[in-house]
Amino acid sequence: MRLLVTGGAGFIGANFVHQTVTRRPGVQVTVLDKLTYAGNRASLASIADRIEFVHGDIADTALVDRLVGGVDAVVHFAAESHNDNSLADPWPFIQTNIVGTYSLLQAVRRHQVRYHHISTDEVYGDLALDDPTAFSEVTPYNPSSPYSASKASSDMLVRSWVRSFGVRATLSNCSNNYGPFQHVEKFIPRQITNLIDDVRPRLYGAGHQVRDWIHVDDHNSAVWEILDRGRIGQTYLIGADGERDNKSVVQFILEAFGRDRDDFDHVTDRPGHDLRYAIDSTLLRTELGWEPEYRDFRKGLDATIEWYRDNESWWRPQKDATERAYVSAGEKVL
Ligand code: NAD
Ligand code: DAU
Image 1: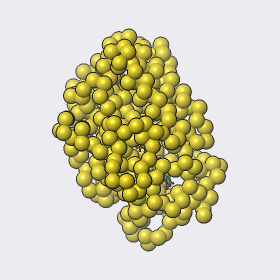
Image 2: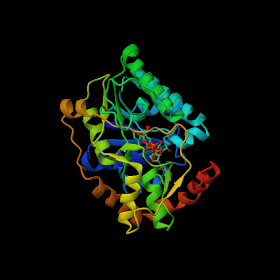
Image 3: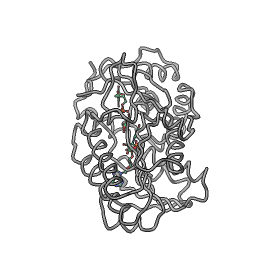
């Protein structure tokens, strides 16, 4: 099988490529990545001789058409992925997440290539803390931020290309991922690397928001199940029953560093901050038999902390610029 992986130098894409090379050595992987601030070739360095890497933009229709014409399937991870950045400047999110997806869809349509679309639970908006339900495949779309609205738009394009043009696509909407190779702008790596630098973790607002954490390897094993056996046109929600509020996550990390549980700062809250995400992954589990391997969040978090301690040369070049960007965006200790 020849597989094109867009965004393979980013967090989830790079972990997907590592998992594929390890578990499915017969698959020939080509990565297409623009290497934005979030892309890092170092994430693929240890397997560079086992894949093909193409530096380019998913919105470059001629390049995309050529690459898609040479593969059997596409898995589309490439995106602008950070909510805070989408509040500061929405344009790259419209361009990459919507126009870039359009470019891929036209190519898979022309070449009749199987396509899997990676999306997010954020397209469904948020839930009240005491809501007994969770997001499922039939929850209506209700995105809150420019990021989640751009992902919702891309999902809608995929659905319409299936129905109108017979494109052989599946979609997955996953909850918050954690694990190695995640950019230090994101919540968990930001707090881990702050603590390595002896800086207090930073909690937006009161920290009551809930995210449904899943290890990135579990997300990617689910993507492979869907690629192998998913029904064309179907959306699958991916989640591992990992709901935690942000304050508890910061406190787990503080404990792992042997610090006091209250040794963190409250900072300016995110405008429009979604309160809670929760995934019901029954369809994925019953129809495709998928189960997560990482069931103990604290164990997964400890391994992630160890990874950041062992791989400082990977994240250090991004750390100062990332923290400066938060300050220029107006973040203040409350
Ligand atoms: P990331 O920001 O770490 O990586 C994105 C990658 O896409 C980078 O390598 C970047 O260089 C590349 N890229 C950006 N624009 C591009 C373009 N125009 N052309 C080619 N490459 C481009 O993102 P991530 O966290 O790995 O997320 C990957 C996908 O998973 C996204 O579609 C995101 O919406 C989705 N997702 C993420 C999470 C999460 O918790 N991180 C959860 C659910 C879904
Ligand atoms: O739910 C899936 C989504 O998860 C993905 O679609 C996005 O690509 C991914 O970035 C993530 O979005 P979030 O906005 O939930 O993730 P983030 O890591 O930015 O923040 C997680 C929570 O932590 C959120 O409630 C905001 C809060 N936070 C974040 C940062 C960076 C803090 O309290 N302090 C921080 O310093």
